[in-house]
Image (cartoon, rainbow over all chains, first blue to last red; front, side, top):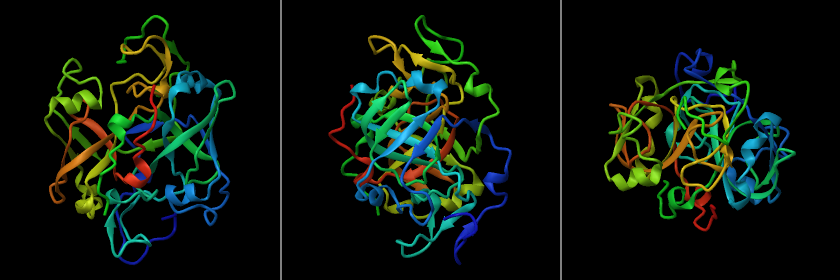
Length: 165
Length: 165
């Protein structure tokens, strides 16, 4: 759901969370680099992004690069990024793939009160000095603001038999 | 790493990201309810929290409760929460369990430039009208601000053979 479009049957809340002063502030620690330059190019989700096959990268601002030390032994990352083109007020949405309206918290839609996307990606290569991490593909526009990078810890993060309807 | 304590060998950055005007603003959509009332009570991480056995819950503010519709078919949630007691400037840390200094992005420490914690928890029960989700245990203080709830999607989120050193 991008700014401007609300489908019949979708529900928005007032005030728009994006228009509020907010309760806390985030800093952009870098940017996500992908081949996707327009919304029309963008894959619909992480799965279709992966199927596109190419890699993406994370560019980390100089001040934050010392924070990359120690990632050498990590195979996969949790990446949190800020979907800055997304509406924040559409609380009930009608996604194309679903049969009817769904609450935003039951969807992975980028349009949400806090438009923080979470993706799990392989760490392909790391250049700490340059602040560059080559990763598997993500489903966001080139230049999307980056909020956080964490090591993926399979003992707590991997639930193979989880159900998702 | 809580406000006040920096160990010898740890590295802070200036300006403190928590003192900057920030690049975007988040809203608190609710609170995490846990039995942990003081930092001394708090388990060290999600694994030790789980071992404590009890459950936690998420309280969703009234305005955001319509967003819970559709979670009935979801077994596990991705919960994003705001570690509001944590420092944001300690870019290299010396965790108790590690042998030496590690960059913050190679750790799951709550002290990070954007103190957003991510936990994967089972959804135990859901009361949409009351805005209450009973979940598995989390490792945060009672009252910790909640940023987002997402369905866990095992086909993209579960990487059982990921390596974490």
